[in-house]
Length: 383
Image 1: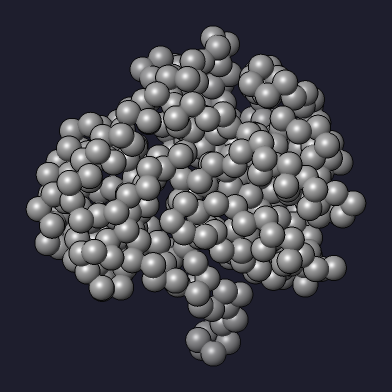
Image 2: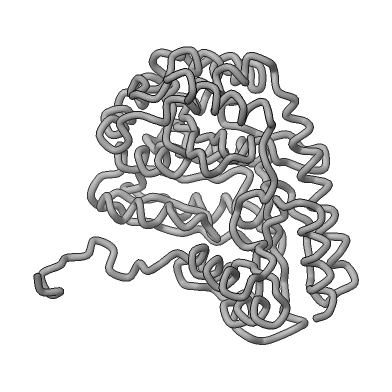
């Protein structure tokens, strides 16, 4: 077939920056602080459970919406964490990771010509998913260096065609965290509208310095318009297992499931049984916060004596770093040279912006063993 006859739905979309930088890191055997996953294992108990259910023969299709027993565990956990009731049979669905959940939600609700508001810098899957469904992404830039949520700009961006607002809290890549004040501002903005909220909360247990995660599940007045996406992979350090879940009121979940059944059909069966068993014991989520805050502090303190400028991340396991005092190179060139000459991989943040804003900022992932972080800091201190 002639290339002229191939119609691309997203013609300007190339390989993701994560794949590009990861390949470059592997090529140079660099210390990889680019990609957002841990280099340490999950709980031994959880791994043993996964293997045991495979051996026991739990290897065929699970129910399309997920194991009911696992959904019941999630309902109990959500009630305990956020005093929010979601019915296991009609308001909770197990998904093949958060990215599938996000794509499914956007596909379910975004129509041709609908506008979707996105705070940027933004996780790179949001905009393509909107475009693939005929929607029009519109961006609200988060002011630097603190990367706050600019509600006045969001309010001005709303039009009669605004269908959805995508929220990411805690926020990747900036580490910004929404406060109760932020949620109140959001509530006032959407009151009296038919705007849906897609709340990406995969880093819900990674907030620092005594802050609390302000899940939209905490706010009953927002529940009827909100789809919440969560990730077991992020919470329990198993990103490759690709398992997440969605919370939404019945009316929204009905539409979500219509798409999910054809996009994913069902999620890995033994891993669902493993999590169902693992979650029978309440998990000390506070330990996750403490572990990642300690790792953030290792990175931030280690950069204090360098020319990098750092405003400590408030959440997620990412840290944005300003290198303007070191080089005037564009961020991709600087990040590439950092791999070649200093053996440390990062992500240039211009790729999180529609217009490729070059703010001389790169992103490090600190979800790494302490030894990995110290090795990276040793290299970065030489710059």
